[in-house]
Length: 307
Image (cartoon, rainbow, N blue to C red; front, side, top):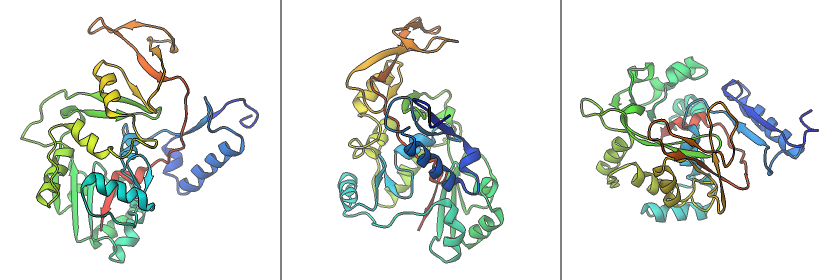
């Protein structure tokens, strides 16, 4: 049925990616799509349904052990040179980082001596918890940045309290390559800092100044070299679209068609609806031609081990 269909898409969730043979399963699904011609044309593709709401955005911005923003691989010298120049450093390491699944083995052999963990609870959710607990005992330093006193935070040497999603603003990226800005709902109490403010302050004190005033400036710095690949569209177009209450799509459309969402209905070209809150007319801009990319489910991207 799948092979004979004119167009077919595969979507999988965390039940596949968190399975013991998750990597092999995803590769098999991708190979199946390639063999049946269900890649590289409209209404097809392989699409991971992520476990959290902004895993796609984290991957786009380089929160993977082997890529920079825009899925540009660390192993290529031209990418290292480009990002080193953009970030104002002499050079960048040629070796890639480690995935969280490698932490127990690497920590036991002294290859990873410290871990900086943000928004993740490996002592609660990772596979082979006994090995993970042993790895944390082997680490010399564990830093946890979170909003709750999780099991992992309880085992940390340093705890950095940060704000929740309702106490800061930013941009979420969905699986369909849509960017949507979200706004702060309440002011944080007790002088809490956002994640990017904490990272910026630590980097500055360690000799790499990161003086950002808002999330737009920090996001621009992260993605400055990523515009030539499958990274988010240019900041100017995204900011313009989101400031008007619309979602921005990637790749940036040269020609765009206007599509609006109508409650309890399937989107259709040239539909319009009024916003209940403002009475304004809102629409979503989508590319005229759709391209789907195969993107791995990077659960390991949410925790970075520091050598």
